Length: 514
Image (cartoon, rainbow, N blue to C red):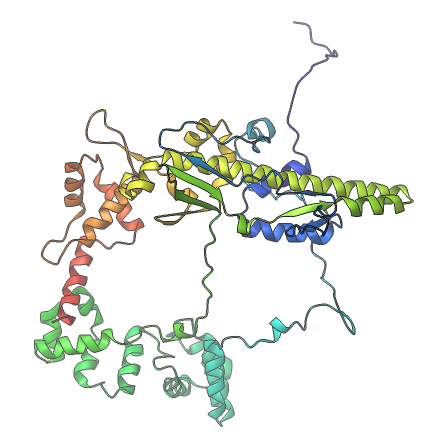
């Protein structure tokens, strides 16, 4: 074999990830709210883009200025029937990228652990200048920023420290207050506080007892027993029998009634009353000052029954950002551009604006196409409930609509479906398959099996607690081929205690209801 250098001419095709294509892929995996935020940033940096407003007719009946809008070809909805096998048509092909051709794998740029490429169309991080009647402001004195916030647990406790006159005691209280957690507890080891303040441990512990009189009742406790004791003391219910019960909470958790009666020195009726009082207390008094705002889920797609049967799938147009290119403004600034740099900037801004609008249209088309096929595949779930949820993978959807699997994965990320049965994340409908015990029968969805296990546990009583083996027997009687370890895994994923713990919980609960 001869070894040497030679020149060869080869012709090949490859897909190059331009910044514009990277931007379109990024938009695909954003939710509608995240997309709106992104578009708002683009509106700030691109003078040719503007927010689309409802068109108003002029007095002569003609429309306003010439504009290219993002909602001219935006798909709105598609209807599917139970026997329909066609997909919604669109003039623009949905966005789809074969990641094997670009990266050598099915993972996109954001799935490989590396930094996300910079696909911005300009500087997005500069301060926003707000021009008022008397000058320019950086926005630091906006009215929204002057509204008083909710009082935190730390602020509430520090406000009560002003009543302490001794400076050393106030310093101890300051350190202890900053050690408190969200539930209202302090660490059991106070040596570090004594070392920081420069006093003995006895003084710190004495100060802690005084702090335990602060509001809310139960704060500054070192454990659950002490927290409950503080609250019972404030209610004048901390007698020796109750203290004995608090010292043996592990017996209460295990349901050992006989030992509790012996240690507390009371009869069964008094013990039941004491347990009822403890159940009425707050084990985490500090959480009353937790002001986390629950963010509502805004659906990206609506699914509703069609009058002729089947389902109507439509995008949530209320949350979709709509932008347009002001071609009239483009014509004016083009005529006024004198230098080559100005003309290049205007042309680049026009291309960016047009590409953004096209990306929004392709994103909407792709989401609608994937959602339509998803609803078609899970028709039984929407009609009959979670028991009829069928096994489904991303590959099943990708093959049905002739898209790449990674594209389907990005479409279903951070997206929600609003259905007659509630709001579900798109990823909810993709579950593993569990074989049926009957030969030739269809496989079952893992989610439907979890739902069945939860139903069985909810229906049990103290006299009939189901072990994992018993649940396996019941499911196999229903033609579900499942192993005991799988039942245990599903049970733990739903935070359902073991049969032993459930028996103890029901036993303790039965005491309080007598």
